Length: 239
Length: 239
DNA sequence: CCCTTTTTAATTGTATTATAAATACTATTG
DNA sequence: CAATAGTATTTATAATACAATTAAAAAGGG
Image (cartoon, rainbow over all chains, first blue to last red; front, side, top):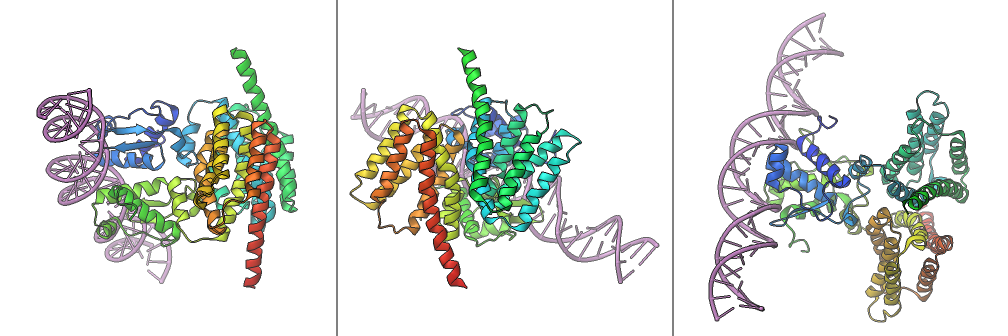
């Protein structure tokens, strides 16, 4: 059990949040009443209610007298919340979800590179460089390669010096983890991919915003094209 | 009082959230203890604790025994939460904040237009067209013009058919409202701006993703350039 | 005197019970 | 049948008690 060290409220938040995101409770469905949740989890009403309030704050449910606790429409879900993203990650692999992640990465990351080229401080450039170094000499396990990859993307976002982009580190990290599921885990980051990262870094370092933007954009459009291709193959088979 | 129709817990959430976002409680500061909050707001511990849990869920505070309730580092704040965005909006006008909003809009909106050109359904195109119509014949109040403008941007995000972009409607709406504060409220949307919106719509309708992307990008880079200019004028004066 | 350990006390975490408020549903009445 | 009033269910709030955590103080040992 991973959540045993957390307090009761947070365990219930995690459990219910996960179930909502995986679809065990669908939009419009009622969750068990407070009283039922108390007996199901064998906890007090205090803990139950606090868990419900936390999920309400994350936009997943609503709770009103006589109406009960209901899953609200997914357009209200705080999809950029770190917990919500982790619950998504626990769900089934889904090619459409991967596409949605890639589509937004395509919006965020090239522009983050643009901003990094404008505003990155010395230490932030160093952080990007360190991530690249980790990627290069990750001759040991493959997980390290992917972790270093994540670190690279995070450090670019940090270098944008924009709090909104920085908050999106959670999103990008989850997107990368979803991606890793689909590319074979055993295959580390390729040399070509590594080189593309280096190129973007050089453009950031040399303060070439537009070029950095374009380089990031090209790489990501290529990745998205592959997924789009996979989806259309899948959809043609279904006919 | 705007919040008088809400229940006690949510009033306290709003009050504390607003104070944290405006800087009355700074990062690392301790909020009053549960007991103090109870007396300050004249409510029970139940309501207090539920409010604290909701703010914890939004990433603003942490609450641990003996340590108390503290404002956590702003990188943990859920800046895309609709409440958090509204609390930001209640704060002082800030040119740097406006720039941060514009920088992310630049990432999101051109790509949303790209996706809309690919995936928009008939009814979603109609929604965009309706917003444009509202913009055009808003000869009455100026607020309507701005509301129609917001509606346009929202309907493009909806047409992207990507849940992440759809969730960002809150963000874009707040960004536009922040913008309206800086451009004189009395000045309605100009004819040139209206025409730019129409052009983007036509490109979406005719399924020209790249052209729609470029058109949106050009408009927004121009807006951002103006703000950057204002900031550099301000910073030169400060010397 | 400094370092480690133990104790203490302050604060949040959980449980329990009671009552209030809101509202979907039912029954009544004209 | 429609409008109204009543009822019952569910969440909202309150009050109190005790448990768990942990920062800080006190005690102990070298």
